[in-house]
Each structure stands twice: as structure tokens, then as C-alpha cells.
Length: 247
Image 1 (cartoon, rainbow, N blue to C red):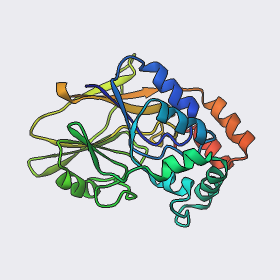
Image 2: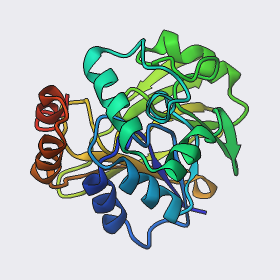
Image 3: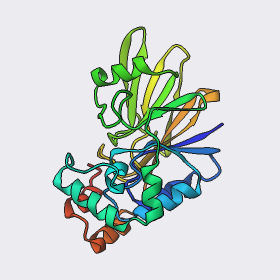
Image 4: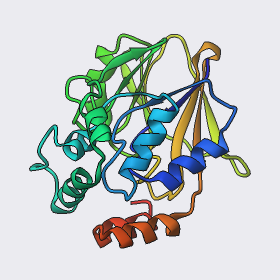
């Protein structure tokens, strides 16, 4: 079974549809690690698409804030602005769908999925020391997480935490990780709609764990098209500009 692993789409329909078109026929099922909405101009359209492809989805912090399930008091002013805008623009049925999304971690097939960390879905996992608890708590060899918008991950082998970085070889769109049965993995597919690692391309993964492989993909999309819709919607300029820099 090949799983398309999506995360942090952030209401960016152009990026999502570009990814789906690029890897059409290469996956059997889809999972989404949360933050379907927030930041971007297409909350209803992205929710519709995720529901259409029947993605197994857990909630992210922006899904909670954008639906009104949680307040946005701990967001920075720019993110809070868009969370409130999202609430005003979501159709009732899509707000209800977001409100009912399950909390991670959950198990899908042979792997687990969580938005942030095992013990706190809103915690950012940037460093090995932060990853250790989740690696130790994991009830599967492979766990996929999101939230940081950074493609990569962590490993636990022989009581040592390692760091993984991925960059597709020249002329290709993905790099492949071959998993080892004695290693535990905490893997981040990166962000579809708002990458933050200096690479503006959408990031995601395709996992075929029955064959011990995870492909980490980068795909370019029409950033200017998204920026125009963001400007038309009156979304904050810093969010519009950051898409051009992948930060």
C-alpha cells in the first residue's frame, strides 16, 4: 500500500492540486497531518478537495483556530488575523468537518501520524532533544509528523537520536529513504502550502512501508497565482511575501 503523506496545506489550493496532479497514479490512499486551513486564501476549496480524496486527517492548531474550536490568542497577530478571516469565510459544513477532526496521534496501517508531538499536538519538534520523547513513545516503527513546515526527520537507533535531511538528486523530484527494521523513525513530509526551509516548492512524501521506502518530494507550483488571490482577499502582506522565499 502506497500512502501519500500531506501536511500543512494551509488553504493553498494551487499547491495542493499541483501535487495531486504530479503524483496521480502513484498512491493508493492519502493521509493529512493537519493544518488544512490557515494562512492561505482557499479554505473551503482545500477542505472540499481533502474530503473529495477521502484523506485520513488529523487536526492541526490552525484547524482548531480557523473553525472556532479554539481561540487564536496564542497566535501572532498575523496568524490570528487569518484565523478570524478563515472563520468568517468557511462554509458551515466545512467548519463542522474541521471541528470533528480527531486529535493525533492515531495509527494508520503500520504507521502513526501526529501533528506536532506525541504528548502535545501543538508542540514544535525542531531538534533531537525535542524528538526523543516522541521516538520513545511511538508504538510503530514509523511516525509522520508536521507543524514545523520543515521536510526531514529524526531516528532512534542504539539509544542515539539522529537527524535526517532530504534533497532530491539533480534532475529528480524526490529522494528515497530506505527504512531499517532496527531503527525508529519520526518523519516530517514538509509543507504543501507554506514551506519554511528556503525551498519554495511544495513538500510531501509517499510511503511504501511494505517495501521499506519513503519518498520525500518537492514540486514547484504557481506561487504568483496564490499571491494574487491572497492580495484580493486582503490577507496580510507578510504572508503573501513569504511564499516567494520559502521562509
